[in-house]
Length: 313
Image (cartoon, rainbow, N blue to C red):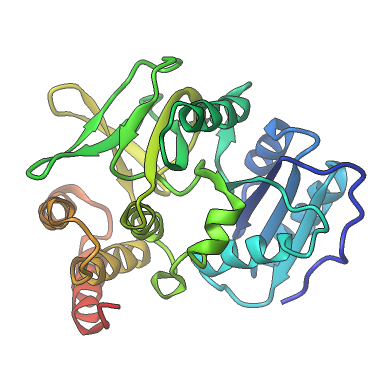
């Protein structure tokens, strides 16, 4: 792991971002960096990208102000990479107040980051014990939004607020990319669960935040372009929905981690029930119409077997 020299930043920053990269698209990463506030501290943690991609990342890092690159020679996984970026921020003499987590393909629309910060502060001023806020995610392949997760004791569902709405939405879960939270809270809860590597890292984090008494909120005024899989398609189920298309390896982690989380006591029963049904649905859709069906199903089964053997924690 190689890290940049301790930076000299002229003015204390309110916001720091951590972006994890792995062979990223240069146009997508450029669009993200271009959308971030100039005065924010931008940390990129690269997970062993191939040399040609790393060269492009280094070029972009020199093109924008306050960008600091941490390079790993091995793929640490999403959770560990985010943790390394957040830990690096602790060397600053004046720590930023807020931390924004980003995937390499997420692009905030104009004013969206400011809306997240304002939304957090407004909710906090109103007496809410806010842990994290997140944007409305818009799929670039279908132009549909992913909505926000909500739940009762018996039902796990999504709500689809009007993009740009000024009304915050109380959530049961937030997607990792676009999550804004106090850096102090990230330190307090000791960061993300590195054993999960990728997939459901944000799910575990959301439930751990709530288990410590904090709230999750969606801010529909903040809109980020973001893909949930390698690509997406859409289907009709009482309205158009987004269906992510994933690789066999991603399905391995998705199934392994879902089974692992089902064994943990702080994970709500309603999510466990929903997740079990979602795993069955995903396998059924893949078996009928998915690409690489044999490989996909084999990796799903491998993930289930591994998840059953994992310690609950």
